[in-house]
Image 1 (cartoon, rainbow, N blue to C red):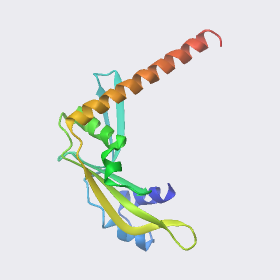
Image 2 (image 1 turned 90 degrees about the horizontal axis):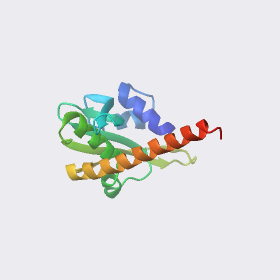
Image 3 (image 1 turned 30 degrees about the vertical axis):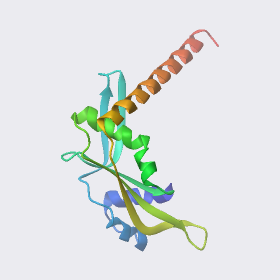
Length: 164
């Protein structure tokens, strides 16, 4: 996680870090107008408040970029990512249009001779296609999760009220 945080901070500031591999990695990531872009949108009016922080976003062209480091990423994993579906849902709800592009950019990592995790100096990018149908199906999962949260809160309130 520390390695990913270093990458995130370096991408945000675009300043040299003193780590040659990390500094070289910065040039391998595409540019997006917004970093750490917060997006809020209600699902079903105001009943389900949704919030996300997109690593990279282009609000004019509706392009989403997610930055990952660490574990192995594959196209199948990217295509099945609930996080990217959530981001697509947020964009759909806020802008009433599907994202034009959804990319996951993965900074490969490796263990060095000392057993420490480090950047390998490569970035692999995966594009995924999330359709409106995918977003609608995913929104059903969000509604179910929200209903479960509300029921859990209601149950806890009732337990407190009954003196348990």
